[in-house]
Length: 139
Image (tube, rainbow, N blue to C red; front, side):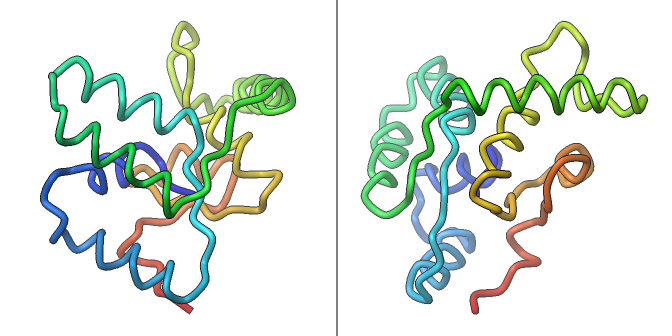
């Protein structure tokens, strides 16, 4: 499952980035790669703000190869539980006034037992297995 950082790299108009090759190797090996709606939201809002239409087109094109996971009520309820649990343990992943996209992403990852590919393993490791894409090789 891709977090916003790697998803943003993949939506970059230059398709020769190393992460693009990494993704192609995983897809060729039959790995199902998920994009949680919350990561799409984080990337899309910035592309829209900056008027980056080529990046938006590239982000939209990823839907042909990747599995997009919608945010549903059960994901949000689990995210609320994760958020509360992290605070009870004294390990919040975001300011209490923030939406905390990390717990929503983790709540989307747990039911499909996904490894989250991220640049920020520290926050996500509280909830799910999280790794940098450079550290995950195709089977």
